Structure formats: C-alpha cells, structure tokens
Image (cartoon, rainbow, N blue to C red; front, side, top):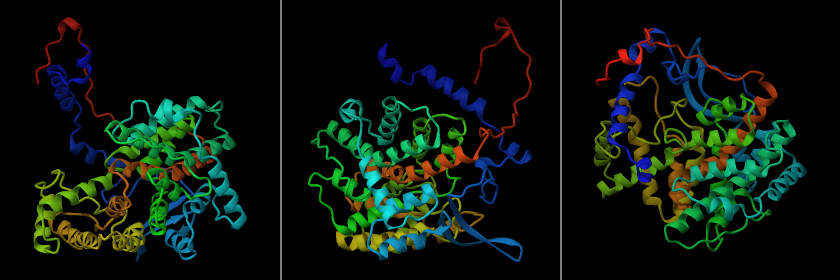
Length: 457
C-alpha cells in the first residue's frame, strides 16, 4: 500500500481528465469580460498594481502622444544600472554588497558605510549549530530550490523572534538570509552531489571575501578562482538582483507580505515562484537547447542549418517541442535587454580565457538569426531581443557551476530585491493584496446523492 502514494493509478488518471475538462475556461470569455490574463493587456503591458521606489524597467517612450518601443533601461533606486556597473567595474571592485546597500536603504554608501556594511554581512555568513548536518544533509533534493526553500522554512524554528514583523527585526532576518543564501545553496548541492557517489566537502565562508568570491571558494575543492571569474560572477549577481515589482517572484513577495506573515514564509513563497521554468529556470532551458543544437549541427558556422533548426524550434519540431527559442524575447523589453548588453562584453572575455570563443560565436549567430525568424514565423505585437538568461547559463557553465545551481544562483541575487520589496510593503502598504476573479460558472440546482447520475467523460 505504501507504493500507491507515488503512483498515478487508473483512477487518478480518470479524475485528472475530468479535472481538465471541468476547469477549462472558454477563451472567448476573457475577451468578453476584458480580463487581462497574466495581469497584462494585449500589448503585454502589466496592470498597475502598486507603487515602488525600488526599481524601474523602462522599455517604451512617448512620441507624439503614443508609446513606442525603445532600447531597454533598468534603474535601481533611480540609478541606471549601466552607470552602477560601470562605476564599480572601472574602479576594480566587487559590486554585489554595494548595490545591496543601495536597494535596501535607497542610497549609495560612502567609503566607511560600505566597509561597515560588508563587515555586517560577513559576520552573518553563518548557520545555526549543526544546521548543515541536521537539515541540509537530510533528504537532499535533486532540484536545489526545494532544498533551499526547506532550509529557509527550517530557519524559522531557530529564530526566537520569527513572527516579529517590526522593521528592525525584518531587517535582521533579511540581512541574515542575504548572507546565508550562498551557503544554503552550495551546501545543498554538495549534499546532493554526495548522494550520487561523489566526495563530500564543506568549506566555511570567509568574512573577508566578497559574496561572489565566497561562492566560488565554497564550491570548489581547492577553493581557487581567478579574478575574471569572480568579477563576472559578481556582475551576474548584480544584474539579477532586482527587476521591478511586477516580476512573478517579487510580486509574490509583496502579496504574501501583505498578509502579515513572517519573513521565512515570504521568502519560501518567493523561492517557489522562482523555481518555475517560466521564471528562474529559463537559463537551464537555454543551455539544454544549445546542447541539443550542437548535437544536431556539427558546423557551427553554417547559418543556413542553424536557421533551419531555429525554425524547427518555432514549429514545435525540435528540442522540447514548446515552440520557443529560449533566451530570446522578454515580457517587457522589445528592443534590447540592458542586462544582456552589459553582460555580453564580459561573457566574451571569459570565453576567451576559457577557450570557448567558438561557442561564444555560436551564441552570437543564434542571437542574430532568432529575432528575424520569430518575426517571420509569428504574429507578434512587439519586437523580440536577447534577454539576460541567454548568456547566464553559458557563463555559469564556463565558471564550472553545476546545472543544479543555476536557479539557486538567481535566488542568491534576487533575495536582495525580495528583501527590499518586503520592507517597502511593510512600511508603505496597509491592505492585503486581493485581486478579483469573475466567476463564469452557471448556477445549478442541488441534487441529492440518490438523484445523481454517474459522470461520463
């Protein structure tokens, strides 16, 4: 009997088919009642659900009274992310901690303030006694986002003030989680990796190192890394830290926060959102798609064969038959994704160091061909462009990060944005978020059990 709970029995299959039929809403009703599916209008513009000071995704400008697409821009607390990244890169320092300060507190830190904040985060790179042994090492999951969420929820039990939603306490909890996420992610991978027959090692973080350096140090047996490796990973973290309040996981953060619940529950919900392949798992799909392409096309300079393959993707004939070219297109950006533009130069530099220039050129070829093919094959209301996920998986692979860590890497960065949104929601909002759904089911008369006939599908 114990095995039944893991089986899809004929009865479960039958009930599932009934469920699908009874839950399908007529597509025409969405148009009839002007329901904006996915909280977006037909042009892809999100429904205005709130106000924020944290970040802005800018992809359109007004010309002669009409909105027209323009090159994408991303702003953190009013600063263009291009200026922010240029600032710390030209001064040859890591940016994650500095931009974390900006997103949480609304201002860029001065020298002493930044050093104090880095020290604060460094001191919080620790876990409760035996947490790794008692929690992380127990029942490791192949999908590390599950392990990460489990760890976050379990930290609730170690916190004497877990339910305290005052700003100082929530700030403490958020700073802890920002500091702990790299440890929770890397250690979860080490635990899983051990279950498939590999050696187990646990390196302690170094409070003197940056977040990016600690990730590479904790992940590698010899704890060694190069300057360019750490710099590119740091840049990747900064570019993934925040992306407006309307993305799925940040909106989840605000929705769950508005209920008045604790920080650990909120962050576990955000992790559940990010886990989905339509959100945080996109870079894995990009990598898998390219592996499939490379298996089928030996000449990576043959644009004609690559075009045929890409068209096959759109026609649901290739890879996972989803009809998508992963890494191309974005819900908001239509001309360019500023994060991808910033990232590309450093991806090329890392590819040269790693001897992967040929594959980098393959990515460039797909980037050139895909938008043209999508425009030809599809009727689209806006242009398409390369998004940051197009490059991030390739970068993580060159850095030696296992695929299992790709989405947790996103979480390590985005916990900063989630923290900022949680704090802003607590300070500014006074009501629980409760959108409306229109019921379209017909009214029916109740029948007693004896009067009912068997369901025939």
